Length: 318
Ligand SMILES: Cc1cc2nc3c(=O)[nH]c(=O)nc-3n(C[C@H](O)[C@H](O)[C@H](O)COP(=O)(O)O)c2cc1C
Image (spheres, rainbow, N blue to C red):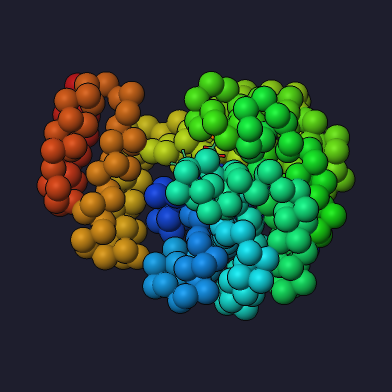
C-alpha cells in the first residue's frame, strides 16, 4: 500500500503514462491484472484552454479503471491550473504534470522536460495547480534536461515546495530519449532530497527488476511502461499474484482488447490502433514472426482478428 496525498493505492506498482499507448482500453486491462494506478496519456493544457475535443477525449474514463491520474503538459501556471481544475471538477483523483517529455515539438515550447531547466517555474506551476484543485498534484521528471547535469533532485525539491504530493523520476537524461539504461541510483538521490513519496520509472521489466529497483533507489513505488505493452500480466507477476498467461488466456485478452477499443474508440480507430497492440501481444511467441508481418500489412481489425484466430488454433494443434 502507498499513500499519495489523500489517495491510497492498493499496491506500489503503477502503469507509466505513455502517449499513444495508455488509453482507456489498455489501462483497464492493466488495472484488471493488478496495476494500482494509471495515468492518461499526456494532455495539452493549452488544448484544454482552447477546448480542443481531442484533449477531452484523452481524459475519458470509466469507474472500473479508477483511480486514474490526468497528466497535463504545458508551461504557463494559470493555463495549467485552469486545465487541472476542469479535470478535477470532473472527478480526476490526481493531476500529474509532465516534466519529462523529450520531444522537440514539446520542449521547443518550454514544456515537458524543458521545465527541468527552471526549478522556480516548476514551483510556480505546482503551486498554481495545488491552489486550484483539491486532489493530489504530482510531477514526473527525468534525470535532467542537459546531458550529464542531474537536476532531478533540485527540481523535485522545487515541486515539493510548491506542494506536490509525490514525484516520479525516469532515470535518463532528456537527450538519452529511451536508449541506454535508466539510472536507478539517480532516483535514489531524489528520494534522499525530498520527503514526499518517490516513484521510480525506467526499465522495470520483471518482478526481479522491480525488487532491485526499489532496493537500489529506496523508492516507494515503481512504474512499468514499455514492458507492459502486449503484457498487462506483468502487474500480477510483479505483485506475486500470478504468472505469465497460457495461450488461451492470452488469446482471450487480445480479443477483449479489440472489443474494448471498438466500444470506447469506435470501429475506425479500433482498426488503426489494434494492429500495434496485436503485434506486441504476439512478440516472442513461437512462430509469430510471420504472423506479425502479416498483421503489419493488414488494415482491417476483423482481418487482424482472423489472422490471430488462425495462429492460436495452429498453436493449440501443435
Ligand atoms: C511510447 C511512449 C510514450 C510515452 N509517453 C509519455 C507521456 O505521455 N508522459 C510521460 O510522462 N512519459 C511518457 N513516456 C515515458 C514513460 O512514462 C516512462 O517513463 C519511460 O518509458 C521509461 O519507463 P519504461 O522503461 O518502463 O518504459 C512515454 C514512453 C514511451 C515509450
